[in-house]
Amino acid sequence: MPKLTEYADMAATEYLLETGKTDLDPLWIAEFFQDAGVQNDYPHQDLVAFAGMVQKELTKRAERAGKQACSEVEKVIRFVKSPRKT
View 1: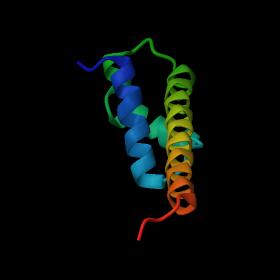
View 2: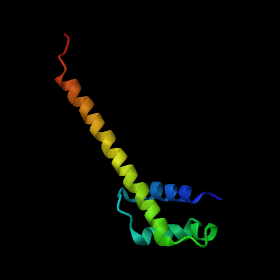
View 3: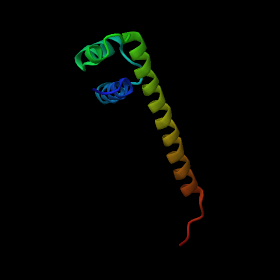
């Protein structure tokens, strides 16, 4: 049985692949909660709390992607500004 955090990670990954969005859809997460077996493996787990865990993971991934994109842009800018040897 996967840990609850592993379920949240799986949900975030699947949601991003399916939708490309970082704002979690309530109907989607409710369906995942039931279909993926979270409800069976963790019968006392609250759907709202689980959705919060998944949203937190989505937000973390979006922030990480934003930082990585900025870093790549800075590398390109430094490359363009550097004097070229001929």
